[in-house]
Image: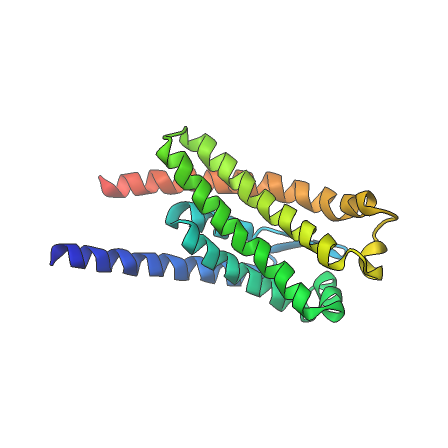
Length: 203
């Protein structure tokens, strides 16, 4: 009976944590907290709650949080984001795939990588940093990759540069560097703080 109660409490706690992190993603997505807009491009900090959720609660929860992030990204394409709105007008289905798949993969990759680090008992800070970095890069690489694959031949994307290298320079340079540095540092710091808080509560 006690084991059943513990399992029930554990599930309830996980659902509560999932709900809180989902709410954070939604709030960030529709306020200035989630995006830094530079011209037609958007630098997003929404990878932070997705990766933290995946690191704490595993790849399945990470994938769900990634899907929430993806849905908010798709919603932004309906007049809230100039870049996304243009892509939506070109091909709504491709836009949906491009906004969803990279975000879901953030949670899957980050969650599984954190499990590996914990099994190997790697230095915690190193594990947090590498996982955070990999999660952010997963978003950037797959988002830009799908953008070029699905929209690379459109006049809109080709207007960013004369060739693929030039287009990549415009799409990746500024936003990728800022996202990688800021999100990796923030995630690492938050994970260390969370672990310290959990240890104190358990004593």
